[in-house]
Each structure stands twice: as C-alpha cells, then as structure tokens.
Length: 242
Image 1: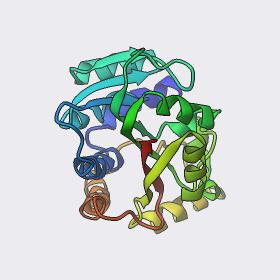
Image 2: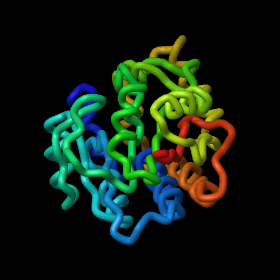
Image 3: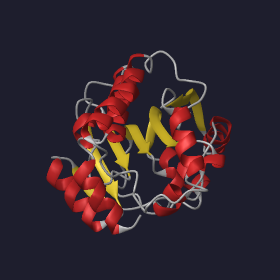
C-alpha cells in the first residue's frame, strides 16, 4: 500500500468503526480456539500494529511487516517483536513454528496468493491454526481496492480452494460484516458511477455515524464464536495445518 494509507491507518485504527469492530469479532473467535496457555502467535502483515495488543491477550505475539513506517509504528504501540518481511518468500523468525498465524486482510495484497498460503502453512505447528480474513466478492472490486493495491476479492469457495491447495484443512468458513453488507454494497456500486471525492474509506467518519457503524458491526461478535454468516463484506476462515 502507499505510505499515505499506512499513515492514515495509524491515525484511525483505534477508533475507526471497521478496525475496532473487526478486532472485537476476531477476539471472540480466537477466544474459542482453545490455544495453549503459552501460545506462540504470528501476525503477518501487522500494519501499524492495531491488532497486536488484542492478540497478546492469547499468547506471545510476533509480527511481520513490509513497510518501514508501519513497522516502526507497530513497535511503538506494542511490546511485540516485529521484523521486516513479506509474503510469500520472506517470512522471518526462521526455524520457529507458531500455534496461530493471523493473516488479516493481507492475502489480497499478494500476487501469488497460493504461494503465500503455502508459506504460511509451513510456519504453523502440526495441528496449529491460521485465521485468515479477506475482502469478499470480486463484483465489489472498485476504487477502494485499487487505492489499497488489492489484486482481488474472494468468495468463500475461492478461499477454500486456495487453502486446500496449500495443505490447510478448513475448520470454519464464512463471512462477517453481514448486517452492514447491503449498505456497503450499495455505496461501492454507486461509486462506480458517481464521483467519490477521493475520500479513503479508512478516514474516520463523523462521531455519531462512526459510533453507529461500530455498534452494528461489533454486534456480530456475539454470533462469531458459534457461526459465521452466509454472506458479508469480509470472508473469514479458520484453518488447520494437517
């Protein structure tokens, strides 16, 4: 992504409805994975570190990030060990295997996503897990995806096939951000015919709107430990190394 996107992310990742709501959903999902007490967790593509404090609730966390500004910011906001790297061919922490690897809205940034998932699988302990989130539905691909350098968006079936090729077993698969999906889809489709003013969706909306959007998205955290939605703006998978 462009450095301007990382800088905006650093400013908004704590309060923005999308980042905060996603963290709440992910926290609920990871809490029911029954990780070992001293779990080793790796977040690949940790960005400016918004997820790291949440992940440290479940074990010892390491991070990987390609962008220098984002890497420095991630080190500032956490006590985690963060090293520079990228998928598929430079994952640091050589020789280490992890109980959980998180790939949170990262895979869409990688040209060879099958090679990326194969590289991820090699860093998971046998029987260990990965949590992967990606933007959903190629028909929603638009200006936001181009701004963030996305190669593609995914369906659940698409993600399942990629994971299977990488040697990962699908334990859970589905979507979240379902309650807001009609609104999100309408906005994305309208942007194809109407000027958007160049505003990045990562920019913080007005306080009342941001609070309302967060409330709707975070409400899904109550369902996430038991069931994913059959549709939504984000596709999510819980995978196991065979």
